[in-house]
Image (tube, rainbow, N blue to C red):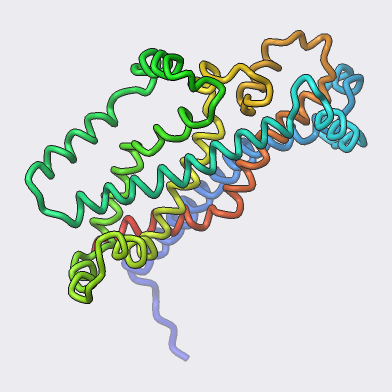
Amino acid sequence: MRSYPYTRSDYESQRARTRLYICRAVVYAVLVFLTVLCLFSFYLLFVNSTRSNAQLQAGFRLTPQENFWTNLRNAWNDVSISIPIGLRNSFIIAILTGILTTYFSALTAFGIHAYDFKGRKFAYIFILAVMMIPPQVGAVGFVQIVYKLKLTNNYLPLILPSIAAPVVFFYMKQYMEAILPLEIVEAARCDGSNEFSTFNRIVLPIIRPALAVQLIFAFVGSWNNYFIPALLLDKLERKTVPIMIAQLRSADYSKFDMGKVYMFILLAILPVVIVYVFLSKFIVRGVQAGAIKG
């Protein structure tokens, strides 16, 4: 068999492939390092939640210990913090906020996207302008209104304002422009479908990945919200998880069982981790679908 010598183009092609492999190896190494760095804090939190207060005072350890269930029982039965009540309150507020934010923002985006009316551009610009205003700017006036209406220690002031979510609206509007052809809406109208039926039965299934993404983000944002709930909730049976964590931060740690404290923090972030683990595929799918035009 006759062998042919390598040409210059062959050498350049081989060098290009080598550089590509090296670049990929470097990128993967950096990604692995960042992943380990991000997960290490969660692992360390889990390890500390398995240790007793005496073991935590003794020093740093990387291996789990045998006090996980003891710390869980002590944290769950602590009447001064009341983890079950905090988890229940946070879950109710977060899930209702996520549903209302996602649905009404999608409905508003559908109205701006599908209808051609006078003032449409102004409405779109106005909503974007509202998006630039930090929520803390109107917090004082909002709290005063809530106190005048005697709605403190009530979930409604924390849930109903979530209907107006300019950031979610903007994401849904951009997603609809990329994935929702108006011909489908027109065809539904020709078949006799009314506007709400078209939105609920045709549009919502099409934009399901975007709905899932925004539902996750809204749920997590509401779960971690501390600023407004801390101003409106002062009864123990109404407090959310972030408020209880803040109480732990302001307490005297020398008088606390640190194993129980770490267990409480672990229980506080566990629902968020579960949401991300089981619904992360919707985030990837929504980003990919929203990035494809037409």
